[in-house]
Length: 155
Image (spheres, rainbow, N blue to C red):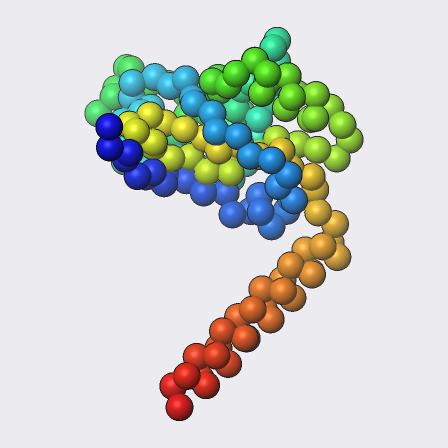
């Protein structure tokens, strides 16, 4: 069977700036039919979204999926809580780690893999202001080095 490439729908760049990502997990999402059609059109935002455990299951909150334009009465609430499909051991591990102070579970990206909607979630620890400044300084140094390398190779 041929492996299909991932089709990226939404990416949470802010999570990488605000948090250190310790571990990542791939989870399926329980969606309604019109939500899947809307996702295929790229109508999704996970900027304010977060993941929480409740009753032995994981849910994603504040993930915005625009209503499908031809869905009329079948459209669901754009900000409704959606269930994540994970193994029990992963749920226990994530919910236990999230209870530790300073840790949270963030959605990092939403994509289609082999025709199924997936979300990449990460166990994240918040960055301090000096950590963010250090990351920006590293990025600037790397950009400057690439610029110098390009100039040297043009001569």
